[in-house]
Length: 322
Image 1 (cartoon, rainbow, N blue to C red):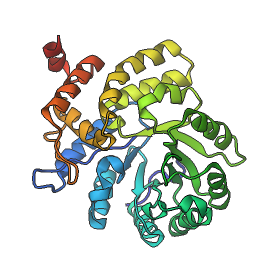
Image 2 (image 1 turned 60 degrees about the horizontal axis):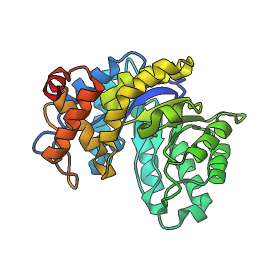
Image 3 (image 1 turned 30 degrees about the vertical axis):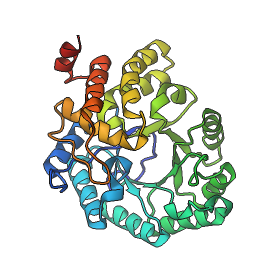
Image 4 (image 1 turned 120 degrees about the vertical axis):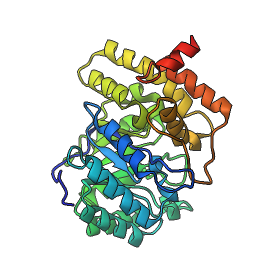
């Protein structure tokens, strides 16, 4: 399939979609298509991301990743740009995935930091630069760099980011998960003002209003798989300077993100799947091991969050809560 959005610049509201599984852990293609149609049907969504954390890319084979991209393009590729995640520890494998995504019809790449850099890679910035160069040599697609918290071993220091932007001009945006408001604001102010601007897409979904008002060019978030309409409402309200509308949207977002991003953090997308089941948008919430089914207490907490957020499809849950 030919790429349909060759001039797309990563910006706006970009949900990272979920990947439904059957009880035998195989991919539920019919449910995935429906999920994609649901997201694409939300006015104001600018693109979708697949083969990322939200699609449990860590648990997918290479063939499954290619199939997931094909399904995504078949379902929504004529309406929205598709961002494909590049999740690999080795640069050669990352380049192979990038080449396949380009040939398959993706419009951009979301490049994850290699876990192989976790043992001191921040002290060798040339390694990160070489990784991005390998990916860029394999594909001419725009790259979204996934920035992790500097409190961990995989975040790229500020000066390293600037070097990557200078030496790999295909990097058009970052998915900013630095986790620190002061650093986040510096990223926004510095990167979006470069001679060749690099957009900052926030993924600080647990404090999205606070993040967006700093001037982000967009957001890329797994929570958009459930509340894309509220994220669009918030983003657009902030863009037009309507604080009242932004606060109203955030008031509904708040209970959902409090539920999604509670400890343990690794269950965030697990919770999103359960939320879609409760809303009648997915038939089951199967996750691949080592992730495991949520407890009944967790699911009950999601029911209360959905009721508090007044999500479409949650009417029965609101009645029960009242």
